[in-house]
Structure formats: structure tokens, C-alpha cells
Picture 1 (tube, one colour):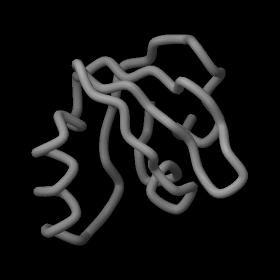
Picture 2 (spheres, one colour):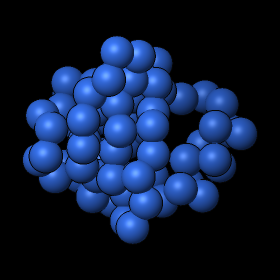
Picture 3 (spheres, one colour):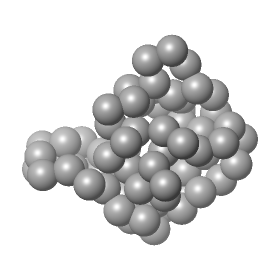
Amino acid sequence: MTLKDALEGKEYVIEQIETDDEELNAFLFSLGCYAGEPITVVSHLKGGCIVSIKDGRYNIDYQLAEAIVI
């Protein structure tokens, strides 16, 4: 299941990030978004979703959300 399909308010654990872009991987890692890290979808928006990772909230578009496997 990907982050796009996640239920709002439920905590999930990131299994893997499916992207070949090293720059994107480094950016996600800097946010704390990597395998084994808990993540919660706060809300789904028209073009993406708001997620809570560690102590931060981020707006992630659906293309990126589909690359995050939970």
C-alpha cells in the first residue's frame, strides 16, 4: 500500500521509498522520511496529502505519495 491510499489519522511505518532519483531520496531523508520511520496522514487534499513525520508536517503531492510504500 502507498501513502496515497493511507487512512487519515492512522500511523503507518514506511517500508520503502520507490524512486531512482538520488536527490529526491536525500531530500526525503532530510525530512525524516525513510524506511522504518512512522508516518501519519493528517489529511488528503485535492493534489496531495499533509503528513506528519517526527515533529513536522509536510504537504506531499500524490506523485511522491505513490513512491512511499507503507
